[in-house]
Amino acid sequence: MKKIIFALMLAFSSLFASATIIHGTTQNITVDSDPEGAKVYVDGQLMGTTPTTLTLKKSKFKTITIRKKCYKPVTISLQKTFDPVALLNIFWDLSTTDFITGAISQYSPNHYYIKLEKIPNCDPNK
Image (cartoon, rainbow, N blue to C red; front, top):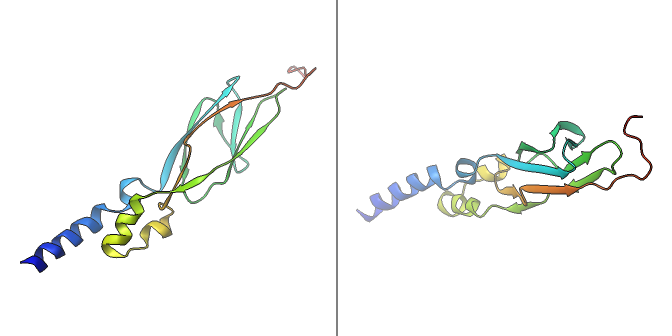
């Protein structure tokens, strides 16, 4: 009986104890700026205008750059932290799924507020 219960627990946990399943392979990142209306680039690709929420693949992106005419651009390195939910998957069934999908990590923080610095004597109409 103990073996059956253990087998059922193992099967059940392998379905639900995965960061890939629980948190997914993407994450929402909110970007806001002062002033608003700045362009948001992720690894050089235009993704939106502040304020915006981006859905980013956890294993793919490295930087966010915020640009607005007459303001100094700001580049932020996206920091990743370990998602502890991935330990459950390793503990229960020795799976490497979270490593392969990138779900083993998460972006932290997931909200950025950037105060842009105005460039002196810049004419936004030029």
